[in-house]
Image 1 (tube, rainbow, N blue to C red):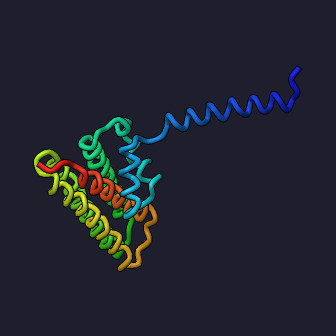
Image 2 (cartoon, rainbow, N blue to C red; image 1 turned 135 degrees about the vertical axis):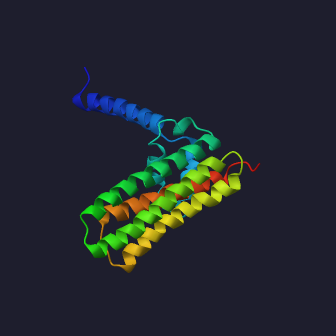
Image 3 (cartoon, rainbow, N blue to C red; image 1 turned 90 degrees about the vertical axis):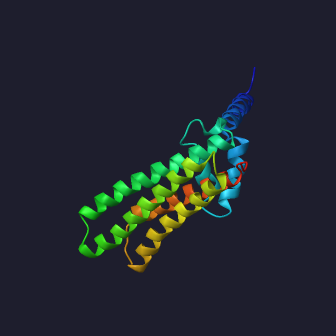
Length: 181
């Protein structure tokens, strides 16, 4: 009754409907879209921002206050994990590289402290939380600058620096939208 071409077109139409529904279900929330568009103007990419925030399964349903908390917790997790990564690198590094890596470790300790400070200030002092969110990125940048000065090559660390700066930029944008007390 139906030709092979007709069946193929029907199957293709059904697949397109299913795929479009699947993509719509997986689209980030409007809040995440807005935050990530703004973040992408200064650091990273829109997709990188969405991917970073969606590491937390509650992000899509979060309001601005919860999203600020999520972004800061992700920053803390990232910078803490990077500290552990740097410690492992130091163990096998030359004395010259150990000096560079020790500076990076100090930078990441400071970045973690900045993210934690911002998290503790969210409800009482959003402006300070916003400032500390930015400082965390500056701390991570210190590591990147040290690597460049010493012409040190640690590709895994450079990638982690990029993520650390992305988490800082996301937190900065999100906390910038918090209502001021």
